[in-house]
Structures are given as C-alpha cells and as structure tokens.
Image 1 (spheres, rainbow, N blue to C red):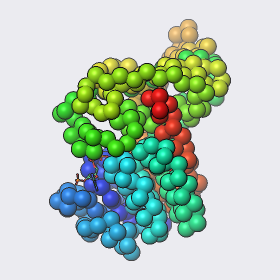
Image 2 (cartoon, rainbow, N blue to C red):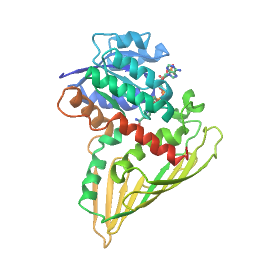
Image 3 (cartoon, rainbow, N blue to C red):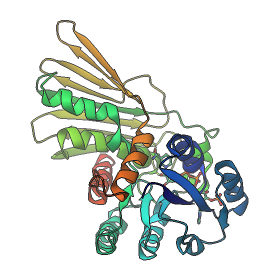
Image 4 (cartoon, helix red, strand yellow):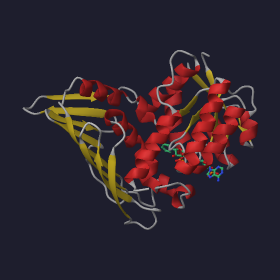
Length: 322
Ligand SMILES: NC(=O)c1ccc[n+]([C@@H]2O[C@H](COP(=O)([O-])OP(=O)(O)OC[C@H]3O[C@@H](n4cnc5c(N)ncnc54)[C@H](OP(=O)(O)O)[C@@H]3O)[C@@H](O)[C@H]2O)c1
C-alpha cells in the first residue's frame, strides 16, 4: 500500500494534538478518509480539519467502510480492547492507544485473543507507545551497548507533572473517574517503563510506596519505587502529578558516566568531562506512523508487539504496588 487510508475512532486530544500534526507531514503515506466520535460535532470538526470525507455515527459503520485500510483508536483506556477486536474482525489494521488495557485481568486475555486474530487475518496491530520508535532512545541503546557510560549502576526515573484542573488531560471525564489502574501514574508511566525495560529489562524486584496529594487525581497521584534489575543495577522510580520538576525523565548512572533522557534528546556526560548530545530530528509519533506504514506495506516486521505493551503495563502496576 503506498497510501494507507486511515479511519480515526475517537477525535479527542490525542487525535488532534498528537496524530494530526504528524500525519500532515506524512501525506505521501496516509490519508484520513473517515472519522467517528461519540460527540458527533467533534468528529465533524476533525473531518473538516483533516479533509476526511466521511463522518460515521457508529464505530461499526467506520469499521465496515471499504475506503478504510487501518483504524487508529484513541478512546478511554478501558474501552479500547472491545473496539480493537471489532476492528480486527472487520479486517482492518489497528493502531490503538496505550496502556494496552485497563489492568492485567482485562489485558492478558485481550492481548492473546487480539494477537491471534491479527495473525490469523494477516493484519497489523500496533500499540501506540511511541517512545518505542524514538530516535534518541535508539541512539541511547547504541551508546549503552558501546559501553559509553560503562556498566549501568543506578537508574533514576523522574516523571513529574503538575496536573491542575486547567489541564486538558485532567478535564477529560474518563481520567477524573478512572476505570483503569493507577490513574495518571500508569497512563503516562508506560512510556518510561518501555524505555527502561528496553534498556535494562523488566525489574526483578520492585518495592512501591504510593501517595495521594490531590484528591481530584484518582486513585493516586504519586508513586515511588525501589527497583533491582537483572544486571545488578538498582533504581528509584518517582512519579508525581502534584509537583513540577525540571529534571531529566531518566538518568542512567554508570561506572564511567551518566546518560540523561529528556523529551526528545539524550545527553552523555563522561567522568572526566567529555560531553555528547543527540537530538531527535523527528518526533516519536512521526516515527511510529512511519513504522506502522512500513509494516502494513510489508517492508519491515512489527518492532513493538502488544505482548511487550502488556509488559509495560505490568511494569507500571509493580511501580504502584499492584
Ligand atoms: N501516546 C500518548 O502519548 C498519548 C497521549 C494522550 C493520550 N493518549 C491516549 O489516547 C486515548 C485518548 O486520550 P485523549 O487524551 O485523546 O482523551 P479524550 O480527549 O477524552 O478523547 C477520547 C475520546 O473518546 C471519546 N469517549 C469518551 N468516553 C467515551 C465513551 N464512554 N464511549 C465512547 N467514546 C467515548 C470522547 O468522545 P467525546 O468527544 O464524546 O467526549 C473523546 O473524543 C487514551 O487511551 C490515552 O491514553 C496517548
């Protein structure tokens, strides 16, 4: 397929602020042909913005369209599994948002069933954990295997965002009364779990403490966990949505230096002074869409599986002690 005809289910923040800016740069690869949203007016506005020809009243109508090859699903987390299954059943490739499910009880049988269905129908199902495709994370992986900071000894995650009732994310009703585990801590945390898991593997041990400073952020807004990894490295994970901090999201401290991770860049500081920086050219969302297109076109294999997305959810559930 040279142009993937995309149907969008859920035209909220993710579709408007994360997908559309990147899809505009990828006009040679994607065209949005049809959209669907619970509140129709929002679907109509999105169709107008993107040039999509059809606004569907129901997801079933969207999935049944002949002019749609793939569906991007950006709905409240706990609702996504049923729609992923329905879209695959209808013969569409699927890009579905993270976390892959609301919890492991929902996630385990779902991932098994949906992966089997995708394999049987020769369809691609990608879970949208975009950091799996980030340039700077790939570069970090290279530097680490070249032992640029020696052996990694200490892992520090700092995921801090002051979430006020002015935030568009806070204003989404489904986040105010979450029907998925861990609230913002897990919702946002799977991305960093993905990076840490990729670089160091799943933690062998995790000891968690949680707290709740802002009762509007349910069920918790804070988690701190002590971690131990297979290579012997230890870590401290700090997620808090009731403070703000200008710190790298992740610092890996090694026997020969430190490696800091920011939103789109990494910075290496060797003991003795030598510094190196790498800045990503394109956003991780851009690369994610490029990858989805390449896999659908048969040019490459899926580089991030739903089973791995389930591990990232499991990682975060350990961070919150569940
Ligand atoms: N990859 C990332 O970095 C990233 C970033 C942000 C979000 N996300 C993910 O994207 C998904 C959507 O998040 P968002 O921030 O875009 O939220 P959002 O703005 O609330 O969008 C969700 C959409 O789902 C619809 N919806 C809400 N409740 C529904 C229900 N009960 N039945 C059917 N439709 C319903 C909403 O329709 P209405 O217009 O009727 O409310 C809305 O358009 C989530 O899974 C989230 O985790 C990922």
